[in-house]
Length: 189
Image 1: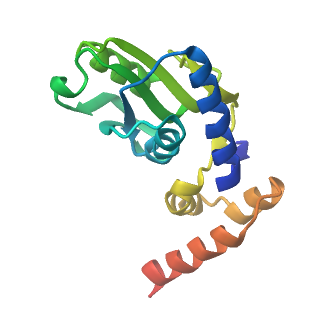
Image 2 (image 1 turned 180 degrees about the horizontal axis):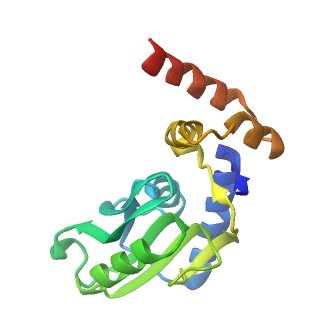
């Protein structure tokens, strides 16, 4: 399997590019809805650039583990009052299969937004839905900095050397070292 390891700086630059493209759309968004957990960090950055103070977290569960999915996405509901007749920007980190995003889009459309647009940092090639704006396409497994512990734990359990992934990507291993130290403390006492 191929992996990529975007840095915090890479993510920031991707959000700058995405925010610029969103401004070019000419839509004044009232709120951001973000998919938990992957979209939380990009949504916070985008809310800053786009000066959108209202950020709502939509809990959509599809993955049950590293690369393991449930049969269909499960959505924890939000109030229609929050979305009704508003311009909504839906933010997530990646469109993998696209099933979670597709379920989220259908759900939000049912809450009667005035306008709904979707932004993601990455997309994968075999997706069932396209965001309105994305920054990069890849078929690699993405190890985002906000999920480094989770990825390290799962990859280690599957016999994958995460340090080699970081070295192959010329990525800074400083954060990885801290994660390994934490992992060792938590699981090895």
